[in-house]
Amino acid sequence: AGGGEEAVPRCHLHPPKKPNAKCKFCQRALAATAAATQKSASPAPARSESQAQPEAKAKANEDVEDYSRRSFNCSPMLKDQILGSHYFKNLLNLTALDDLVSEIGRFADTFDVYNAGSTVSPSCFICQVYRLFTLPQAEDIEEVLALVETAETPVVRCAGFLYMRFVVPPAHLWEKMEEYLFDDMALQIPADHSGGKTWNTIGEYVEGLLSSDRYYNTPLPRIPVKVRQALERELAPLPQYRKRMEANQKTFRTKRIANLPVEVRVEGSWVPGLARDYIGRARRKIAVKLEDGRSVTTHLGKVVLREDGAESASGGESSGEEGGKKRGKRSRSRRRGASERDWSRWKGKDETEMVEEFRERHREEAVCGYGKAYARRPFTVEEELWRREPETRVSMLGDDGTSQHRRPSSDGLSQEVSAALQRRTREEQAAYAQRMKEIYEKYGSASKSSASSAAGGGLAKEIDGP
Image (cartoon, rainbow, N blue to C red; front, top):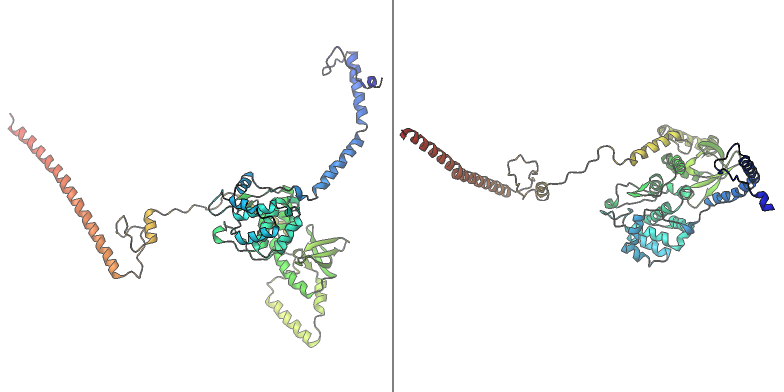
């Protein structure tokens, strides 16, 4: 009976998709269908709430980093080239992270993805980075961060940074690599493997990984637009952040960090607060309690001293006559260096303008070619001969002094060699003239005599004939 009540009646005369407005069976079927739809729509909010809970859990799980199912987000072609490399097959014998670190320090001779002069042979460096990805220890990202912090060789640290760029999700790149943007460890790239890159420090290397979509000529994992815009806002004022970081590290050594009045750059505005303590071993970050009660952790590049704290700190340095002398010396030095900015107190340029400049600069770099970018014209055979031995080679065009390919003789050339060259040149010119004369006498005079004889014979015929 229950099943009969839930069943929707159907018209036996007309199809369901084309009901007849004058048919009572069609109207009865339409009314039953509307009632069933309204009845099924009543518990919909309860089901939507139950469905919203798994969606919220899935969204929350996106923020949880699980590197047990990580993937190396490179192109399939590069992955096949690495797996087919004989060097990578030998790296499979290394199962400990320390052994791989020593291998990177010994045999990594370039930072490029491919060897010099090749686009199919992967370098030792990228093979070592991919081997780091295949190690079980790399499932814990903290192991890689410890490797990046404790390694004494720059190339080992760069291998860790490149691994994070290929593996870490784009939303977590900034929090993992922000602190290393201010690392000033020197980085030396071989001239024949530079590929036009001008990274001088580890900080510049990390900045290049975050700001560019390509590593040398290899595409990096794509960063979503929203994350890219957030990175641009952080990377655009990075030059002045570095200057302020250097100034604050010197200034904070002479001050007590606890309860130091500062201003912090938070979400595009400067907010006053009190510094608490350093965060991390590198002492590049501090914890600050803002006036509104919030607590933030930021690097020293986003922190400036407040004027009241600066005046109170400088007011108690000296007293009496010695204090007056010190103040006089300090005031004179300030007058001499008035053009130099105090980055510990200066808030810098407008960040909106710097973001626009940053985007414009990288927009130009993303273009395939702009400006005058022409290939160099290769040497001809003549130029190559004169480039190697300019004093002993003889031009195939002759020594007429008008050839642009021949280089002038060196000042240290002996007179005997120059006389021999001139004599040889005169002999060649005389022999050439003699050959031309013989050819002319042989062919030119014979053609003239035959032509004159032919003309004389015809004239004689005309005269002797009737």
